[in-house]
Amino acid sequence: MRCNSKNWTAEVPEFVRSDPSMWEAVYADPSVPLDRALVRQIIDDQRRLSRRWLYPIARIFSRLVVAIVSIIKRVLPFRWMPLHTMDVLCVWFLRRFVSPDAVELLIRHFVIETNLVNFIVRNTAIDMEPVTLRPETLAGLGDQAVVEHDVNVYDLLIALDDVPLTRPDTLDFAQLDIPPLDPERGRRRILRLDIQTALCFMNIPFSMALTVEEYRRAVHSIRFDDSFLEILALVTDDDTFRHWKNAGMSLWMDSNVDVPRMVYRHALVCEYAHAHLVKLAGGAYPRRTPADFD
Image 1 (tube, rainbow, N blue to C red):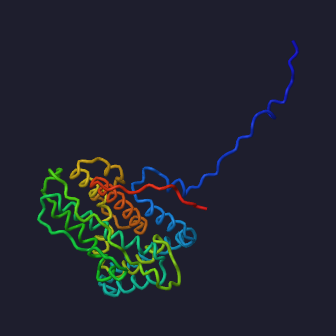
Image 2: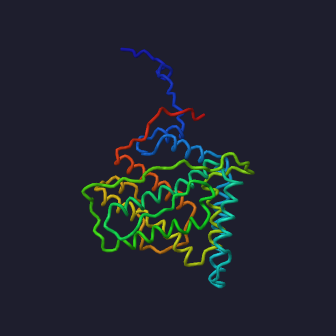
């Protein structure tokens, strides 16, 4: 029997690969517990030209300058810059060189972390009053808000010493709201940097204004993210909080790290934890159809 020769290759349909948008997939990811409007705001910030082109340079520049400052400050261990001056510089920088969306995300983080601290205060038997750091304006980031923000974390952990961490009969979900925030959108800006690039530049006056030990304490406060997630898991009896741990150990003393990168992840962890508390409280973030990401 003679075989009938055919060109089978020509009969195979051509495989057409799709060209999905990374940003649309991130936006639609059902595992992200955040409000869709907030997710879109974060994505828009990540897509800024400064994030793609300037951030890699700013990241190296910031680490180099901060390292030099840290070395010199060990020889000259005094405060190089008053804290008030640091506040003035940072607020001025945010007003003139950072996008309003990025500024809003930064203000929002202070409120979010205060809400998390106060949730633990209200649902454990510790001797500590709820903290009051909930800025609503860009100007509210002055007056040593950054330092107070870190100190609140330490005060809470110290107050929890020997306090049993179990779920109370009734969880108190008071003050999980986010007030209207004013990032001064109407102000004319020279540049509109993304939040990560802005953090790189802001870390420089921060390292100059704080003493060596104050700077170490501020950097180390970020290592308590896993501790906070574990506390929230125990107090709410909900393992979901443990999913966002980063295997960070508070006993690991190391301030020679990429601070802006750690701060950004810290802010996202706080957002995730806060969003889950809102869900436990009976709230639900709306999930909408992805917008046009072209």
